[in-house]
Image 1 (tube, rainbow, N blue to C red):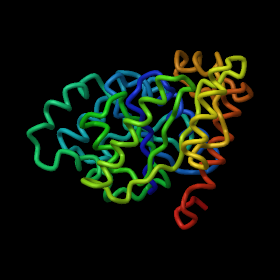
Image 2: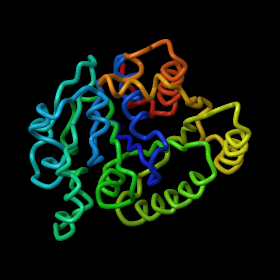
Image 3: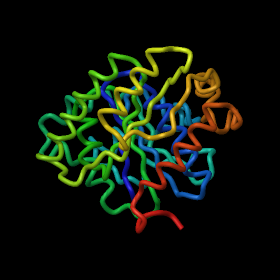
Image 4: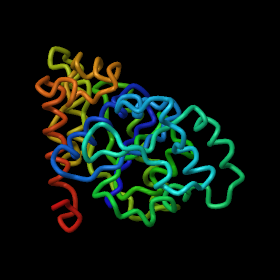
Length: 258
């Protein structure tokens, strides 16, 4: 199972929207997909249509209580896509894990024996605390959504430093599979400037596909649906399908789904 963390410590850059829709797009192309919600706000779970009543076990139980992964997985309405939901209890996990031995390896250990999926996406909270460190320690690679504005560039440099530290201390095999430019607005000159800056600094690491500002992407979560299901023909949905195809080309050949 390929493990992809979706992280950026800056909030509002499209992490959860990317996690929901890229996971749905991969499932639509025949992959067996697991989505783990590590954000205490639980927006990825809500956006997939997992209600509060369904979240009897969650990523909190997985990390803090050591509950087996199979006990925490919920089958979503999307064929081929299962979810480990998040609850507000997860907000206390940072404190509870501080005194736990090997506290950064909890997620990695939970996923160690899982072979029922082709790929796992981990939606991280907008911080670089223990939850995100668990995701980075467990992941094979990192997908970074980056909003096309100036402050997002500052956050990116901090994230890259954190990745380097994680490689040195916890996960030497962690790589970055790509940076996805989100909330792209061609009418805004700053958007083009930020995009040019990112591409000049990171080169081929930046995905060619950009995710546009799109009202349908914002509306879909309120219906408990990924945008690809809510309106598969909208510009945002088409962009996420294109991003998924581009992502697949970057995955190791030996680990791609048949």
